[in-house]
Length: 197
Image 1: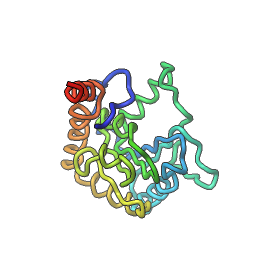
Image 2: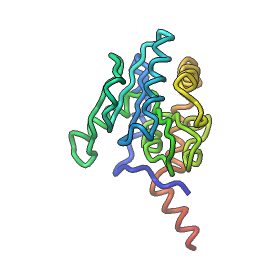
Image 3: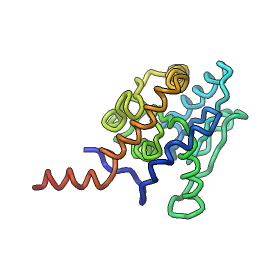
Image 4: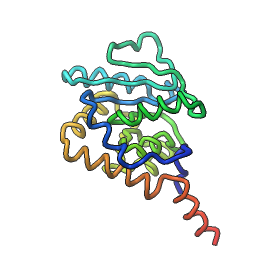
């Protein structure tokens, strides 16, 4: 049974549409352990989308990439402490305007960051490992690729999803719906109560 997203308050549903005013395809790589979470693949994805001459940006938040991962369209945001009001506002601003969470993790028992992203209507593009596929359901709130997938595979999928504006909008809405129906603590508590009963 999936745990709830790590957030004190649920954002208003209308916030999921803010991203449509952002004309630059914006990806977020949110991780403290950049190597294990697949930071190299996220960077490869940026390069692939640039090769298609797409107006794209990769935001790296929570970790500092190695120096050889440098690109004018990559923005690095230091670790954000959501208990601090200013950091929390930055976190909300980022999640309100990005189009995809990219998390090509090599090992994970779950993906609370995917749940947080879904609360803002952001689809999660992740990998088939651990409990990730229990959180991220293909075509509903994102997609899971194989552990062998590289940046070009992630890039092709993201390009395909983002290019069809009608399908992308549906994916945004179903990502939020997945959060509302399954990936929050009130739902978890109700399901857990029924199990205990």
